[in-house]
Structures are given as C-alpha cells and as structure tokens.
Image (cartoon, rainbow, N blue to C red):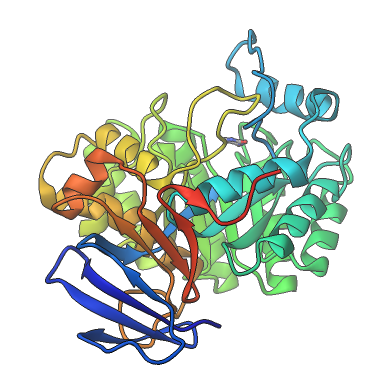
Length: 397
Ligand SMILES: O=c1cc[nH]c(=O)[nH]1
C-alpha cells in the first residue's frame, strides 16, 4: 500500500486543502509538509471525490477496440440473448481481452470498483467467468472487480445452468444473478425458489436483472419480496433495472418502493434511454440504496455507451429529468457512494481512515463536473496514481 501527498484539491467541491495518504488510507486533510521520500502530486484546485463505481456492467461482452460490430437484428430481448450466446466466440469476443479493455477504460475515467455480471450458460460453462477472473488478477491495485454469476439465458429453460451457477459460487463468484423469471424463464416460482436456495446455501447476495415492466414486473417484485422475508435476506438482495418502478401509476410504484425500503432491497439503474426507469430522487426520499452502472457497452446488444461513469451519470441525470445542482450532485452520488452502499464497501469514502481511492474532477461544482465530463486529471487507488489526464498507467491489450 502506498503513501502520497496530494496538494491543493477540493474534497467534494469544498475548501481547498491537501490530502495526506499513508499506507493506502486517507490519514488527514489540511496543510502538510512532504515527508522524505513521499510522492507528491499537485491537484491544481480540482475537485476530489471517492472513486467512481460501475455497479452494474457486463465486462464479458464489449466489442470495444474490435472492428465495428454490424447490428442489423431486431431488438427483442430473447433474440439478443440467443444471438450473443451462439455467436460471441465466432465474432472473437475474448472475455479476458475485452474485459481488460472495458475495465481499464473505467479506471482511466476515475473508476475504482466494478460489479460485473458475467454470463454462465451450458454453451460456455465457466469460461467467461474465468476470463474475468484473469482480468481481476491482472488489474489488482488498479480497479476492484466483483463477479456476479449471471444466468443470462435463463435457468429453467437452460438445463445445466443451475449446476454451473452452483460451481461458479463454489469457485468464488461473490454474488448470484438472475433474470426475468417470467419473461425469460416463464416459471417465476421455479427460478426464484432455486435462486434463493442457492444463495442461502453459499451465503451470497442476489442481484437480479428485472426488465419486466409494469404489472408483470410488479408481480415478480412481490414474489421476490416474499422470498426475502421467508429466507431472512433483508439487505442482501438487489434488483437491477427494475423497470416496473418506472411505470405510470404513482400509487402502485409508491407501495412497491415502501416495501423495497422496508426490506432494504438495493436498486441498480443504468438510466436506460429505451425503457421506463425508476426515479432516483423518489428512491432517495424513501431511503433506498441506489447504485448506477454503464451496463453493456458497444456489444452485440447495442452500440451505445462508454466505459465512463461520468458519462453514465449524465445519461441517468437526463433520463430522470434532473436539472438542479442538488439533483446533479445526487447523480454523482449514485455512481460513487451509492454503488459502494450496494456492494457493501466498508472502507469507501472521503473521510479519514477510508481507502485512498478517489478521482479528481474538473469543474467549479459537482454539478458542473457531471455536465462537463472533462478528462479526469488524476485517479488514485490505494494511494497509488492509476490514471492521469484520462489515461490509465496500464495499457489495454
Ligand atoms: O440482461 C441483460 C441486459 C443488458 N445487457 C446484458 O448484457 N444483459
């Protein structure tokens, strides 16, 4: 772990000061003399915030840095899933190389932590997860990666997937994923009972993709709530996307949010422009933990997205119709501390004793930084400079 004296920065856009880092942790804010041999960086008055967190992504999928993927297919969920599963090897999407590109891009843009869903299906077994684990090892000290064992193609409709999920959790995936128990598996009781049993067996949290909208998604949420209560998993379940919370029925959504808050369910949003998304301000008012993610970027699903959580903050902010400075500061919270709260990162933050994981931002205020999306002047992980002026210290393959 590293020592560093970072001069002249504005923590959370407040008063300028120095940050003293000892042994990879923040040890003081104020004015300090450099100690012999201690590296010194000049922050030049930039804003300092804790490292950005991509708490919902798919590191195994991007075509970033590869030839342009020509997409002329229909945008139906099941078709996207099947096309990707059947063609990813032939297209050349190597999970290790591509996840390196994706993760290094995030690190260059201020990222310090990732939660990535990684596909598990009978066609690929655990190969995709193994590729991400190799990346995690190579990027140790640059960006932390948590892996969700993700049954992208379904559980009940894909025999063999359950056993692979079990093995992935045995081998070290930290979180169990799930997907649209009605829409993809057509067997909500079947999928959800299996997921909760498996999570309880391995003592891991669940993070379930729920694209199901409106009444169908609300019905699935209620089934999830029942199983959280039955298995005592309050505080250990996240719902990703949660498009049902974007439905146009204020009272129904309010009742769902009340239960989400009571059961301490976390919500992960990508601000998907093509869907109805949960209101991050309404969730904030209810005290719900909310993180953000860039989702799949430039993959066979679609061409959009950047490996940059400030870019994603802007998308989430625009999709939520946010304008005021306080609201824009909250979007920044969603892609930083919000993700840490969902992932349970205990030493995360801009306080003495926290891990020295942060990024500098250019701008007068937090809102200004979110809107401008200027290259990050400096990124620090564990007290070590990991990126400078938008470029990481490690080269992507
Ligand atoms: O289920 C999903 C949703 C978005 N992107 C994916 O790769 N999978």
